[in-house]
Image 1 (cartoon, rainbow, N blue to C red):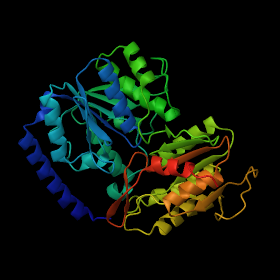
Image 2 (cartoon, rainbow, N blue to C red):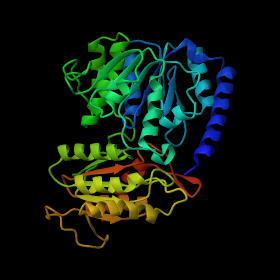
Image 3 (cartoon, rainbow, N blue to C red):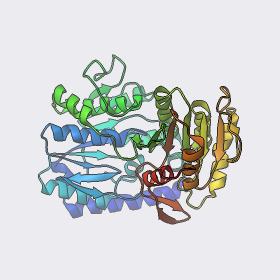
Image 4 (tube, rainbow, N blue to C red):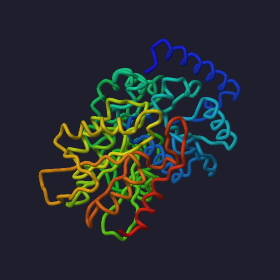
Length: 413
């Protein structure tokens, strides 16, 4: 990890670049209402959902997310890996939005972006925090510092929208200076399941939470309940977010971006609600990123799945086998038993669950689909989601999770 001094020096550079970008593009955000959305999980889905609701309500709205930007109906790529665009790119996008007389911009904001001044010169009208759980400690070092980065989105905004059910709610509430609106399943939340009827086209209790967040934002801006309900009902899941892959094998396949402990736990709990048969999960952990979460995710796999396959996920310059070893240690600590690919699998063993180590992700997917999964099981491929590359060493290689899954489905063994 970088030293504190090195980080401060780098952030000083980020600050200078951010100021230059704002001046260069003429402070475009001052003439647009910015809805900033951050959180450990759910921020991308929530941002896209808010955009769709506003569009349904006839508002002139643009979207800048970690997947893409949408301005005046044009979809613009925002990069290979998930992060808020650089200061220059962000200001350029806002300038473009202003050119088309956009009234609202829904902006997904990462903790890195908040810490590195990428949102400097962008007054947030409504700041939303979906939740805060363990993540990015490789960068922020402590959970406290991570939370402090997230809370910056609440600074000087007109309204703050917080998750009433989040364990950090009381702390975040104390940082709110303007109007406070809450969402959650609790009856004490401003927007809760009794406020409106939520019908989703895709599963997951956590997606209901995202929908409540989206509804809360929309209500703040005067959009009526019927319009919100209809937009939520018609909302189609994003690529790589609870994305089902149709097949004729008799088991369900879902691709999800879950790459954090809390997100992995949520998708596996959702899987338990969907099937009474086996829950299978395939995932890895990124290299040169938060190492603490590796064993945590292994423990989660051991607790909530029947079979787990640990594999590559952007190992970068780290040894993928060492990353997998750390994940496997967490799984083993919770009693999960390791098997080799060639081993006979005891599917009827009720109190025993198993994990496999397969570093090659294509091979892991092939093995899971053509050997491990059986009718009525559910398989989750987690971690890569919509991303179109995987990093080995310092080079990005083309990767498409869905196409790799479809290729494996095309085989008959």
